[in-house]
Length: 70
Image (cartoon, rainbow, N blue to C red; front, top):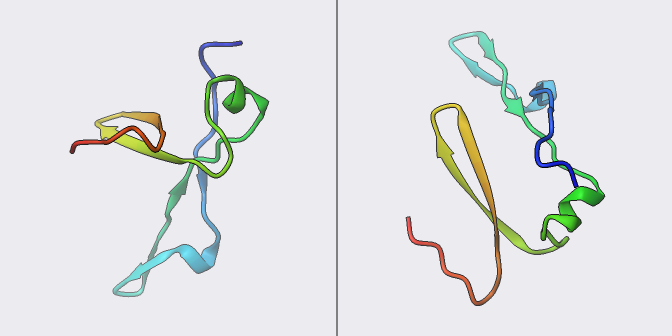
């Protein structure tokens, strides 16, 4: 399994755009999909935690026995 993936940050559709004083602000979107997610331990229907840092997102699978402290 590859340890890194290169993805493009997209933009959500117009109905998800934010309008502020008549100016449209786009909403960025990152879509993750593929068999490699399962191989990495992510199962459909389970929850994930996203840890946000400047220029970095970390995605963690959450199992029922796991607890996440902010």
